[in-house]
Length: 71
Image (cartoon, rainbow, N blue to C red; front, side, top):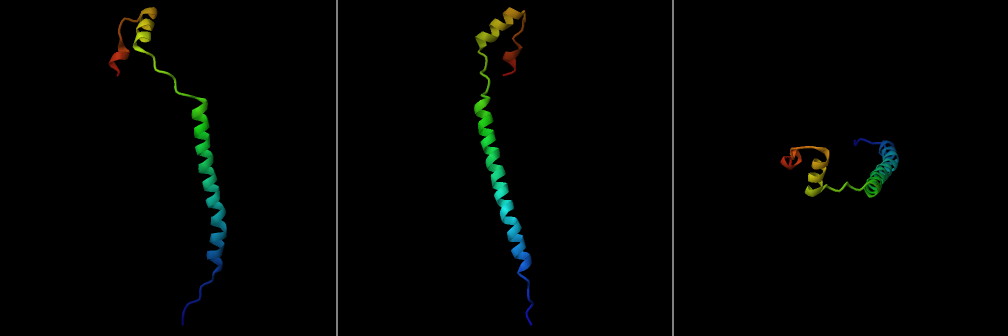
């Protein structure tokens, strides 16, 4: 005799899992939009030129060019 299985647990899992998947997709979408908005609002700072750094060192009294060796 074959075993009978109840369709209720599988149906219940599908009923609960479908909204959860939509919630996960919505969370990923909102995170992507937030990252794009944050990047657009806060652009990266420009790098200082070597000429500007030398002038800054001279103006502040720094003798060594320690910033050159770090690159």
